[in-house]
Image 1 (cartoon, rainbow, N blue to C red):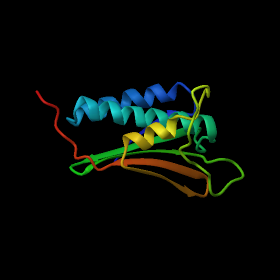
Image 2: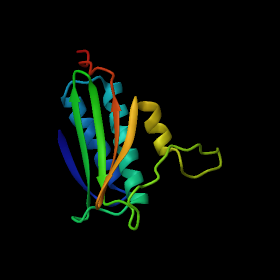
Image 3: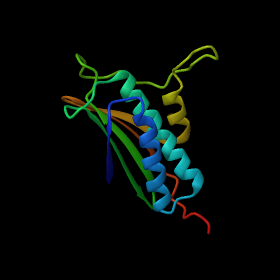
Image 4: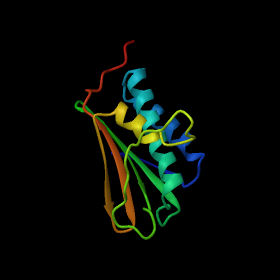
Length: 137
């Protein structure tokens, strides 16, 4: 599993997107798979920045793994202060809503996603079981 540490800042969504895109491209995935993975990572980082505290280091951990069964991406943050079981759900956003689409996008791009919480940290993960396909030359 690879991990990219990013600041707890809005600009980190773009950093995560570029990092995951480069890593998945280097792993030989198709452009479509790499772009989907990069979008998932940036949405998860954006949600963590907006709704959660940073880890004690002041950062977020963006982790991923790629194998012949697919890939998994996760973002770990410091959780929401005062809660032990975060209520995280993909919701429907209306056409006039300024936000609320991130987890719906993640849910559409992956086969499964979820949340794991432990003392002082929350990890939101997304997994696809689409086998990694080498990019065509």
